[in-house]
Picture (cartoon, rainbow, N blue to C red):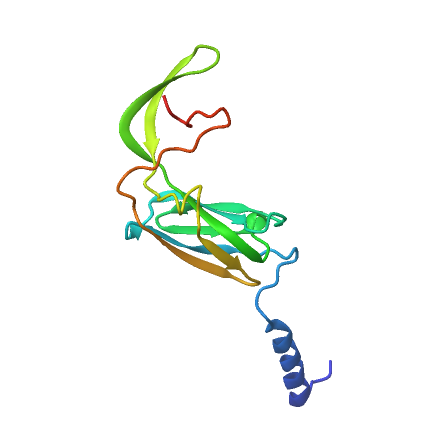
Amino acid sequence: MKKLSTGILLALAAVVATSLVGCGPKSPDGRYPVSGTVTFGGKPMDHGIVSFQPVDPDGKTSSAGAVKDGKFSITGAKTLFPGEYTVVVTCEESSGETQTVTDELGKTYTSTKLVTYVPEDWGVFSTHTVTVKEGKNNFDFDIPRGSEPTPPPPTSDGKTSGGA
């Protein structure tokens, strides 16, 4: 095998390095990962869900990720297309009360009643948006803790979800 000259090796290295540098990680399907942190009342949110809903009614995708110890990450098949998204955060806690619900078949269930202290402007009526761009997207959300629990949203039959 012939020995390559130093000049040829340097030129080859420059071509490889140039092909590796670019505008950031490219997604084969045009979607990109989203991650970040969520603080709730000034402390990392213990658990919850962060969802991203497209602002454009014709938006291509929505997605959500679990919050654990103040961090969330949306990767793989759940990543998002570039665009503007409404951010919705949910986090339910025990109210300390129990509730009894009877289903259509007459069977009765007892469970702990859950409430949320996430303000409505971060919850189902969120006013917060972010823009997902090509490459990695990191968002940090600082959510104030409401002093009163927010009632659960009504179900399709007009009743409140999870209520007695």
